Amino acid sequence: MQLTDLNWPAVHALSKDTPVIFPIAALEQHGHHLPVFTDSMLLGEIIRRASEPLKDRVLFAPLLWLGNSDHHLDFAGTLSAPPRAYLDVLNGLLENFIQHGFRRLVIVNGHGGNDVPGKQAIFEVRQRYRQRNDLLLLFATYWGLGGKPHEAGTDFVQKQMGHACEWETSMILRLAPHLVGDLKKTKEVPPGNAFQPASRGWITKERTVPGHIGTPAAATAERGEILFRTFSDDVVKLLERVIAWDGKSWEG
Ligand SMILES: [Zn+2]
Image (cartoon, rainbow, N blue to C red; front, side):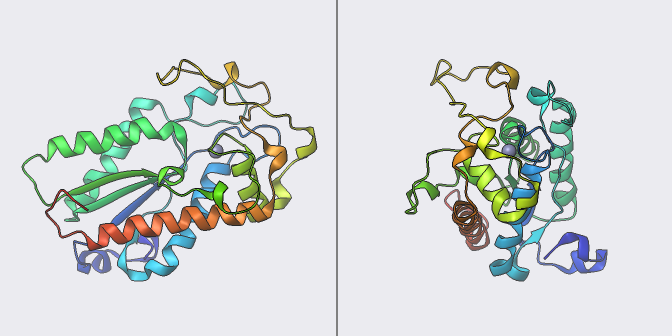
């Protein structure tokens, strides 16, 4: 179900065990060859595919296209919510549906910069409702759900998500090839090793001149289809577990 299609009595009449999904993405630079709306387009397609088998068993809020993208602000066109304001927005969305009586709330993320504020929002809401044992609050990033698209048979160059990379470019080639620029001009930008396994604070321009990180020249629409199928299947599997949760256990 899409929240945007329902009237309020229909939402009120839903079982309060219906999982509510908040897709969150971004609008930010994606190199010379991909549109700034890439993350929102990709997550929108993954959610569209995932919603088909789930039908009326989950409720999808509309995708929040504005994300935490301050690290990309040196590149024209990027829009970013101030990080603390963004944290408040995510808190507010979760609070809204707790007020409406729902108990299973899931943020599904499609942008790396939303990872920290998304998890922090889940953490903060849980602490505020610490007397409740019937709340399930989850955060998941679609490429971090265990799927291994690069093991699907075709020879992927990348083994992990980058930025405007082989993976994202392949998916845009599958979804909207007319928006993809000249890939022959793109050079590989390796992810590097910045003091791993520590987590280094970074801004995008210190890692890449053109804006991408990874190997966009290796992208194909066929790989894009494999990526979409892997990631949407992963989202469905997660949401099936949320549906099957017994409403009280730690395990799920
Ligand atoms: Zn992206």
